[in-house]
Length: 517
Image (tube, rainbow, N blue to C red; front, side, top):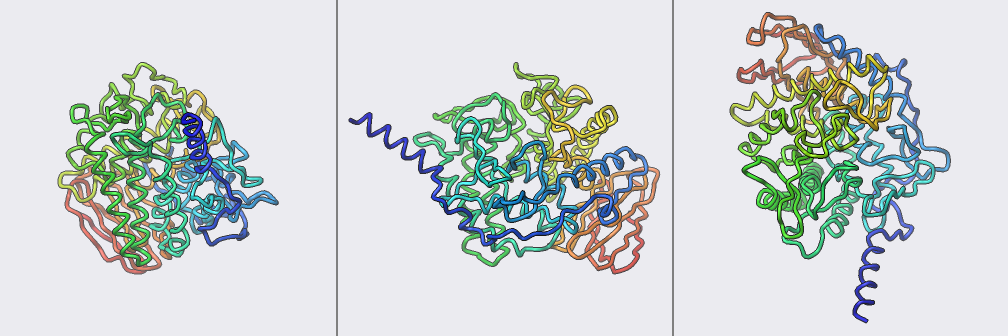
């Protein structure tokens, strides 16, 4: 009898996790398709930011090819679909993937004035279950969940808040925040309830290979460092959104929750000797498999400066993560490491490279002697882009992932993948190679001047401002820069010229010429 009751209890819990009551999208106010056209590349190229790289014209060619492919993936919902918004699609499947969509938004937000890619997330919010669950993959035609190899694999990294905030930084439009907050809170509630294994010594969050997005990763355990760090980040993002709409109480509540998770991760998952974070088993023992997932605590703000230094050493280590094309998804000294990629047994992927670069960016700010983070991110981005470009020259397209040991596509990689592979040629080119990072919510641009050729960007749209920023050629990086800025509205510009202290300028409408020492 006891055995029967236990089986019944477990079955009931499993059913409760994924119970579809028929009430979908209860926590999101948008109920009907909003319409709108899907733009063509040729007609809108002149509205996109236009990079200038006098000594790296290959990157510029790759940039425009990535946009051309991306415009082919702006889609309308099929007739009869319950989707409420147009969306950006990875375009190799008749379904939409949650974390693919989030990383496509990361670069497509640079075309926010042409196609509001952030609205792609509406189609996940509107299909949210009454209990808060959101499936990682949804059929475009009918909005039903796509379940592959079991429901336990259907939860993707909870990065909705990150995509919303990063888009806000380019648009300065917080009107979405009030509408999305209930959906994000309910999703966090579901994850809190169903992504923690009971009776463990860690009380942290579990994942699976498919769920984490790292499909065939050789990992195990009941506390995954990526999922736990992403939950920390998710609560921090919900806190920020709450603060922006004036709900101080919620902002403080979710920030406390984020800090609690961070403290536990540092206590249990950090390995001082190895300088990495690891997954845990039920007893809280570390499972020492080195994967790119170990670096999520940098982006999520869990690692302090001392830990980040040790993690940076791992990224620079040629025996582990510093390979011909950085960064492999599995450490090169692991027995299952595949030089040709084998998907997540070594493949170099856009989402994890973005995670690493943006984590390094965080440590470029606010820390004394942090210049080397910014420079390393620039170097790694350039080598990554070299690998993408060399493969593009040979094949004529951009691929889903790349080999870590050769400038070639990964084994098991889809072509024409823009798709999240647009992040490198577009987002990382602007932010880490050109060093231009805009924040429309603060009406400011930070520019890291770290090149000697003529470089910059024209037609950068942030908020309601359109600006062009050009730095003239100079003899060395420690020489003064002659900079010309044209803008249709005033904004604040902070410039860091190589290793020198930051300087801030109030840029006026019109043409501004500056000499930056």
